[in-house]
Length: 327
Image (cartoon, rainbow, N blue to C red):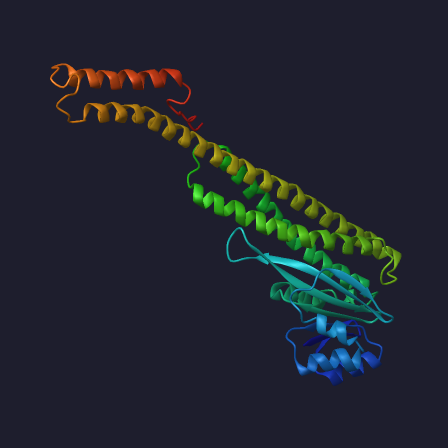
């Protein structure tokens, strides 16, 4: 736990419950950054700021959904930031818990980079704690939303590449392409679920009806909400594009399988009468017509060729399957 306390236009850091309590009693404005769950962090939440036990418990969970809960003395906000996953087609969603009171902001962030960036920014701009705490909340949410933009843009480019690969006649690696389509679909579905809830949270803040925030900060929350609306719309749109690409890929795979089955069926149709003719002429009986006929063997071969040719002429469209070349 680390507290950033505004004293005489300078940010002072504190790490103990007693320091935080004295500053809060003295009317100082502060930002409390919770790292890991410790006895000191629980004491600050419980004893100094009287945070509800359910909220204090939720702040340490990894699977919270975006939401806003309003209490008498503070508001509890949960949003999700985004981080790069183990592969290019995966992302990690990290919970950001924010408790906003009149003279304090408490955060629990899993993203170390965002936490350190915010700490550096407050050191350089202590005025964030000099006014209403809504300004600091705006800064936190603005960083969260800005983190989505490069990921969504990267996914937009990757979806376009996947669509192109699906539409070519011979994809370079069909199995890899299939795995990537399914990975993209899972990731975008996860993003769609989160962005749907988070868009509503930011929309509530943009209306200025939460936290009793001053009027001059409302347009900034509206700007953050507008940015995230575009992010959510891109996720929805390219989610549909991935689903279309998957349907097109499965359809083309099914079509290729049908063409293969047609070719195999035609081969079988040609070979069956040949097998019948060879079976008849291969019966070794003394009293069998044409047994001593010197033209029997070439006649049987000619008959096989004639039957096969007739079958191929009856089914000309299925005789040869030609795929369009790559362009």
